[in-house]
Every structure is written in C-alpha cells, then in structure tokens.
Length: 181
Image (cartoon, rainbow, N blue to C red; front, top):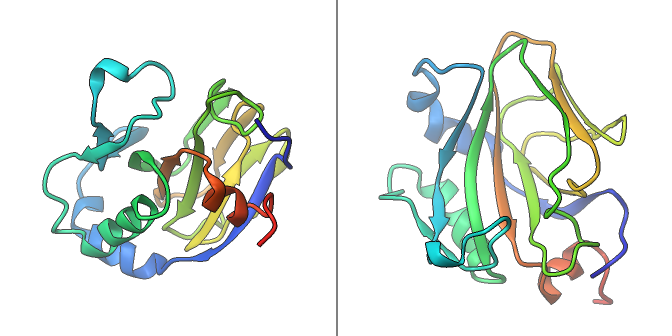
C-alpha cells in the first residue's frame, strides 16, 4: 500500500499512430455510446472478483494488432498483467462521475490501471478529483481511480484508449517514481 499523487505520467512513450493504424478497420464499425474490446481476460476465472491479481491470457488471436500486442507483452515481461482492453467513447458522450474502489495504490492488494490514449484528446476532458488530466496520445498514465473521475467528450470523433491493469511490483513503482532507481 502506497500513498502517491492522484495522477502520474510514466516515463514511457508509445506510438499512438501505429496503434491507430492497426485499429483503423475496427474503428469503422458502428458502436453505441461506450464500448470495450477485451484484449486479455483473467487466466483463472475462479480467482476473478473485483480487481483480480491473476495473470491474464490473450482473448483470442491478437496477431492482427502486432504493435498493440507487443505493448501488452512488454508489460507482461516486467509485471503481472491482469487485464488489457481498448475503451472507445463516442463523440459527445459522457462517462458519469464514479469511483473504482479497487484501482489505487493506497488500496491493499490492488491492481493499478495504466492508460495510454491512442486517438487525439483535444476534445476530451478526463477529470480526476475535478481537475483535467492532460493525457496525450502515446503517453502512459497512472491515475488513482478509486478517487472520483469522469470523462466529458466535447468532440465528434470517437476517443480510444488502451488500458492495462497491472500488479504494482517494484518495476511499476519505479516507473511511478516511488522507488529509488
């Protein structure tokens, strides 16, 4: 259990355009309001309750998105990856203010969610504790999601993020600046 800022930009950068290029066919499909594409699922469903700390497995063949798979596998190489998914939010939509009780470093035995925006976010306000988080495509962010947060989409194009839930081991804590290098 750690006390940390409610938002931390990790010193990691990913190629958001490459991810978007891999998803371009899928993004053309119609969807309603808010949709989720599960890239990984809990490996042991008997352990799944709340935020599972069990390693996940790929949800089918991810070979058609090789760069995104390499990002997922990169996290698997350094920590336990418990969930990876793509979140899409339709233009003009809103995710109401809420909390995710199991997603914060200050919660015993929690996992943490890392967010990597893929599409431009100029028209999207991700508010954490009432303040905007200035995420840009390709950046990787930790946010204390057991605090109140919401998403307001003022634009017309869908917003897509890759979210990755991981067990906060020493490598993750080092990326968050919470362990001496």
